[in-house]
Amino acid sequence: MTFATVVDALIANVQTMHETINEPIKVLATFASRGLKPLSFEWRGKRYAVKDIDLVHVAKDGDARVYYFDVTNDPNHFSLSLHTGTMEWKLNELYYEG
Image 1 (cartoon, one colour):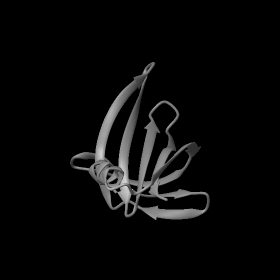
Image 2 (cartoon, rainbow, N blue to C red):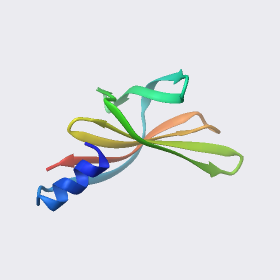
Image 3 (tube, helix red, strand yellow):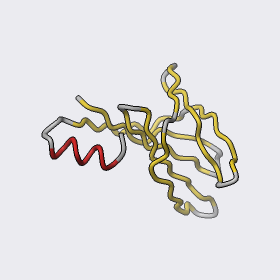
């Protein structure tokens, strides 16, 4: 579910649920020609394939950088992050239809 889909769902009066998670996850990623790309991740014992990467942005945390990825695996939308100081991946947020 892309951000546009979330907005469309809200407009269509479909209930979209949001959860703040902030839990460590295991991520399978590649360093492609266009940079770091998460391919799948494991959260609470279940593996999720990444279908699309909708948005990538970077923030600074002291000397480290935090890479944020907004990804989808229909019908869910996830916000993932990688902290380069700790090399820890986190699942930050989850959006889903309720």
